[in-house]
Length: 278
Image (cartoon, one colour):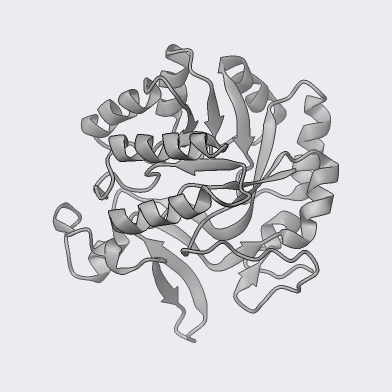
């Protein structure tokens, strides 16, 4: 099993993004996902910028996948999706069935991101027939589910990737909760999410961390950390341990380190997601 770096889910300025990925080029990460998965209004980087970074990372020996939006809402977003699929150099991560459709139509291999609801072996086989090379396990499912599905799939299966570290992407909405928090309409959001480089923490009335608002995306407040399951995942047949970036430096994943107070692992063990099951 190897480490992968999921797409950057937050809105950073262009210079910071370039600095981050040029540091990643010198890291041990073998697989990097690049692109905007959350909101098309985030225009700090254009497709051409991501392609520039993708080529630099490829030249540094990394496998690169271009990420698509998880929620397609407008004709312009569909047009950009088609351009992404037809880039001619890199495969894509499909986070919406529209991306699956266009990749299949163009005979472009693809990865299914965590937002595609692959809940059974039959669905996985079907998408593999359409060109899916790898799938990221839906974040709310468990190790027991994965073990059963891998058993059903047998040896002729696509690669498997699991979100092992990062804030869990839970949902997407047509509304922008970050803009609303600041009293702004979505159409006039001023890209306010740039002010929240790790999202906007939401707490309960008892001041307990609950969720993290990231534009139109809702994430977990706690950071999932499955580093202690590294060897178990590898033994099960998981191919990639995904890290979702939340800062300029990568986390230090010590397998023997107990979870901190702001970390969780419940979904993996079939419990409530915010639980610390072990």
